[in-house]
Length: 143
Ligand code: CMX
Image (cartoon, rainbow, N blue to C red):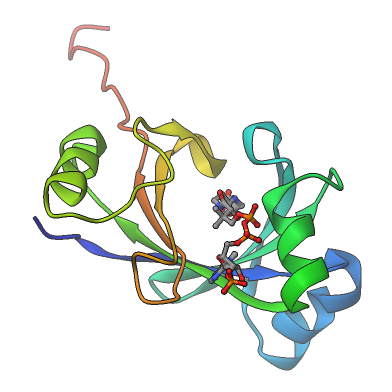
């Protein structure tokens, strides 16, 4: 069981608009765009820092995980996301090793990725996301 790389760092924010200039202008990171992720009830903004993305998470529903987090803990670091291959097998391995998964099966995340979370109580206070990027299907040579 091993992850491939750090994919992104999730940060819970009350307003993407208020924080965008900090990441884009003050830190000078490349702004990659905005995306709604209905399955997670969030709107996300992406900034590229070399091989890692910073993902700002804004709640789109007061009952969402991010809204609850903001109410309880305020703005700040929300999760670390690691790239994996074959996410279902990784989920099963984490469970077999005794870790508590929030998701027994992958869900749809941003950038067409399949994602699953390890419960922060099981991963020593750090909400940990496994994500498997969408695989681009190459057309046959003769198309
Ligand atoms: N990091 C660390 N600890 C966290 C946490 C986080 N992001 N979110 C909650 N916790 C802690 C809480 O503080 C609480 O601890 P205490 O009992 O010591 O106070 C404990 O976890 C349980 O939290 P809770 O408030 O009782 O439970 P919630 O209903 O808020 O659920 C969690 C917490 C992690 C299960 C839920 O947020 C979840 O399912 N998260 C996964 C999905 C998600 O976060 N989606 C948003 C990102 C989407 C994306 O990246 O696309």
